Structure formats: structure tokens, C-alpha cells
Length: 473
Image (cartoon, rainbow, N blue to C red; front, top):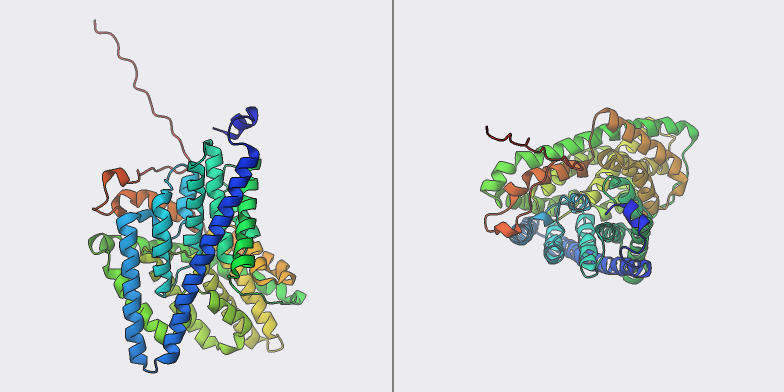
């Protein structure tokens, strides 16, 4: 039913008070699940640090990490392939598909599989973000809630979107950016009405409250940086141009990696993930900054940029780019949102360090400012949501004095990506998901569980009717 139909018949659909109450419950549930998810993954990375501290032999560290990573990745891949193939990778494209009516949110499967397999995947050290699983889990909570109450399709999609926003708010403690993400990123799919929009706001706010005030988890990236001098502003334009190009390349390389491994994955689904997990185990011992989603790494870069030389930064850009692409190609639950922010911060810090070497009178705060602006710039060029990029950076870091340089960087990056004909990463992943839906379903999945392949995103083409037959003479 369309928005016009709902407005014409206000009695149709769920009572407003009930609907908003459901949105609040979705936010609380998604925030709780996200907080527990976060704490378990944090415990796994604390165990990584303990192994590096307690085990002196580098060889023994490699053996322990490689064995643990391979086991966790194999477990996550088994759960995903056997019970919920759509739980693999990021959940954002699945939510966009669900809001467009092209994908099903099988919440009874998504909730346990995405939670357990997601924890295993992130605990393995792969460069994956927790925001993918929490967004998908939040949307599944919204779908389950909607299925428990009689409501129309628009309201149901609104609760799914509200759950997804709550999941993103739980991942980053950024409720405002989560609301804007739904409005800007899913602008073609989101069923915008007063009720659905309000539901998204309520769910995000309650999720952020639960995550921060009750659970006390979330990235600690707060840092105050003063606005740069006026003559620095052209430098942020140059940074935006570079990030626009980088974002387009990022999306194309990601799709190329997925498409290039399709054949191997169909024949030997565990081969590449296991080999890559072993390499991550080695990096966990010798170069831990190149592993994990990147929250702690970003915090470390922002607060202690002096620890990184230009050569080390360039090495980390190359290695972390490779681990980001390789990790997502494993096709296990995990997002690219957080790894993208880490890679962006790393790129911005590299750019800022080079700038500092060229202009020694600049300060470390100038370098940090460029790293912060880069977070929004790369996000904008890959996701193509500049407003979300700006607000997310402000909420994460609290450096509101940098808002003009960040806006300049994000807008430049967005325009550059547009002129280079770059497409949003999640739309590309959704198109790929729809095309590969039948091929990626494992053989042991029953026909009733298969998700129908539907192409032509957002298009409902009428079927041509056959002309009537003439009566025989």
C-alpha cells in the first residue's frame, strides 16, 4: 500500500502509539544485542593481546593464531552456508533488497547465524566490521517484531529500517548518523512517512542509549582538533580528490575479488577462506595493526600518530587494503564499514604525514585533522552518502571545529567519484547478490529455502499480454 493510500485512510495500519512503542522495543533489543556482540568480540581481541604478551616464541604465536583463525573461519563459513547463506558478508545490501521487496528477511535464521557466525568471523582477526552483523541483526529484530503484529507492508518495512538504524547506532554509538544513513543510503527504498521516519529516530536513539549508557561499549575516538588555518583548505580539496579516486578503485577491486573467486568458491568453498585465515594468523603475530575491524587501530592512530613513520604508514596502507579485500571475499558475516574507516584514517594520516614533512611548520594536530577528514571522504566516495560521512565523523571524534574541512573533503570526494562513474558499494553488492542468488545456494539447501532471483532493481515492468486469437473460419 502506498503512502497516499495510508494518508487517505488514516485508520488503516497500526495504531500510532503501538507502532512507536514497537520501534522503541526494537531499538532496545537491537542495542542490547549489539552491545553483547561488541563485548564478546572485544574479549576475543583481548585474548589476542594476552597471547602476544604471554607467549614469547614468535613461531608459537603464529601457530596458535593461525590454528585459531582457521578454526573460527571454518566454523563461521559452515554455519553460514548450511543455515543462512544470506548472512554472509555485510547485511546492508540485504536490508536494501528487503526494503525494495527483492529479498526476504528470514529473521529466525538470521538472528542465531549472524550472531554466532559473526562473532566467530570477527574473533578470527579478519578485517571485518561489526556494523554489518549488527545492522542485519537489528533489521531481523524489526522483521520479527513486525511479523508478531498485524500491520501493512509500509509499516513493516519501516520497522525493518528502524532495526537496521538501531544496529548501526549500536556499532558506533552514532545514532544521528544511523538515522541519516537510512534516509540517505536507502533513499530509493525507504518508505518515507511520518510514522516510519519517527520509528527510525526512536529506535536509533534508544539503541544508542542502551549501548553507551547501560553497556558502556563503543569506539573511543574522541579527540579535539582545532580548525586549520585558511591556507590549508585547498589541501583538503586535494585530499578529497585522492579519496574520490581511491573510493572508486576500492569498489571495483572489491567486486573484482568477489567475482574472480566465484569459480573456486563453488568448487572448493573452504579453500580460499582457510588459506587466508592462516595468513591472518601470521599477521596477528607479526603485524597486528593489519588485522581486525580497526576500531582500536583508528584510536591508536588518532591519539598517537607520532608512532608511525611514513614508510610504516605506506606499508600498512598496502597490507590493510589487501586484508580488507581478502577478508570480505571469504564470504562470512562481517561488514566493510569499519575497515573502510580504518583504511581511510590510515590514508589520511599518510597524506598528513607527507604534508608535515613538506611543510615542517605544520603541527601534529594538522596531521590528525587530515586523518579525521579522510574518514568521511573515503566513506563518501565508496557509499556515496556525503551527509552521513560528515555527521558520522563528527559523532565519532567530537572534533566539531573540523566540520568545514570535513565537508569540503566529503563533497570533493563525492563529486570526484560521480565524475569517475563510481557506483555506491552497497548497490553493487545488492546487484551481485541478486544475480548470484541461485548459484550461491549450497547443494544441501532445500528448494523451499532458496531465495528467488529477481533482477531489475526498483523496476516493475508490466508483462506483455498475448494478442487475442482470431476465430477460425
